[in-house]
Image (cartoon, rainbow, N blue to C red; front, side, top):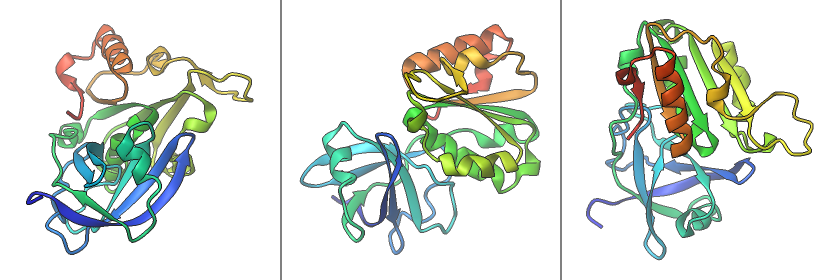
Length: 230
């Protein structure tokens, strides 16, 4: 495992319905300083289970020693990772992927779209923006979840809004909950959202990505201004 580096579990915390936050301590490893762009992902491994790719949810930091992830159960590796105790060892490779081209959004408007666990790399974008909010124009997050209890980072939404990041949440399957907010898919709620001088970052299921791209292009946003993190 020459390309693999040992990291240490710092925390495993419930994040939302069917979602768990994993925090890895990478201090003392060659991984420090290699998360350079929000939206990048890494390969994590447990030798006895296998490997898989996970987007980094924390913002890039040149000397940062913690990586945060949002895990959705269902795969053998995810199911095992969410049961680990602090101090356990997880192997990681260096970050991969182009991430989101955040420099292109400087001085421009930014539309963010995320569904479910797709909020993970979008959170990395948001936290990066918060550090120099004045460098960007209007920022709106369209955040969809299956049920009202499935929104990760709900305790952070207020901080995002305090940073002048507009948050639009919608639930696709409210059921018999007392949800009083928007329902349906994120692309159904663009309304009169301006798209001039704007970039858009998307992360989520392929059907959502396709629907959002179609809606944005129909509104006049050039396809080259719509970005995925892979």
